[in-house]
Amino acid sequence: MENKIKIFYSKDWPSDLVGKQDYEMLDTGNGEKLERFGHYTFIRPYESAFWGKTLSEKEWGKADGKFWSSKIDTKNKLPSLKKSVGGWKMKNDIKEKWVMSYKGVKFHAFPTPFRHLEFFPEQASHWDFIEEKIKNAKRPIKFLNLFGYTGVASLFALKGGGDVTHLDASKQTLSLVKENQKLSGMEEFPMRIILDDAVKFIEREIKRGNKYDCVIMDPPKFGRGPKGEIWKIEENLPELLSKIRKILSDKPLFVILTSYAIEASSLSLGYALEETMKGLKGKVEAGELCILEKSNNRTIPLANTAIWSVE
Image (cartoon, rainbow, N blue to C red):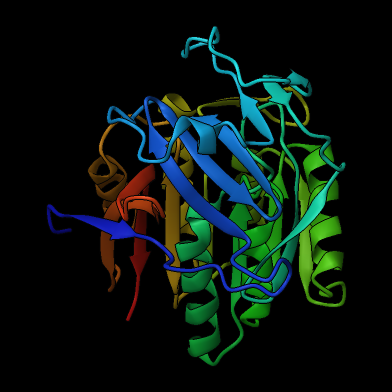
């Protein structure tokens, strides 16, 4: 792997649901980011924004809600905010869920107690990559999504023609995957939705001799499996990567590793993935998942990622 960090981003969110892009990074600064999700705008913490805001306080004050983080001073509150889920305070009433769309795939959004909105818009570049690589393979492709969350990446794998296995340790989250699959009209597409611990699932797949052409994973810093299994990324990620190689097919297409939990450089993920895929033809690219900021046209980094793929 070249000692070089790459920028991964999707330039636009084409949509006809609200007559304009469904998602926009409107502005950043002073430890926060201002974003639009469909009809709603929200303020969320972005501790890496050491610069000042471009838009006026009046524009920021129009936000429908704000997530308060313990890392940020909460004295200067938006006017008329009222309590909501988790660390959110809402100015306006927010419907239970609303529909978002990206390039024909639909999925629900809603502010969660964990500051995000049931999907990660910066991963759109991965969605593009997944669909294109599977579609262009022109052969049956088996796709595995570990720590799959609400399943947007899995839907793009389905859209590309893949046979998908989607795994997560949360029963509630997997119900959202099924909702999104139905919302996108993909109920009849081949997707196994599995409640399991990632490491134990891989171990069983090795014993069963099941193979996959594509694997993506976005492991949390800490988590629990459905039977109370403990996941700690520093301890368990090396073990997981060592087992991933054993479930790859004879002609693997790509492996994607993304992390919001590791504060080290994306090069660290790249080196780990390079070691995992050693001896196979292909290349590793490491970099940052980013979004272009509308107010200042800055490239805003939000997560580390590494991709191994064949041409």
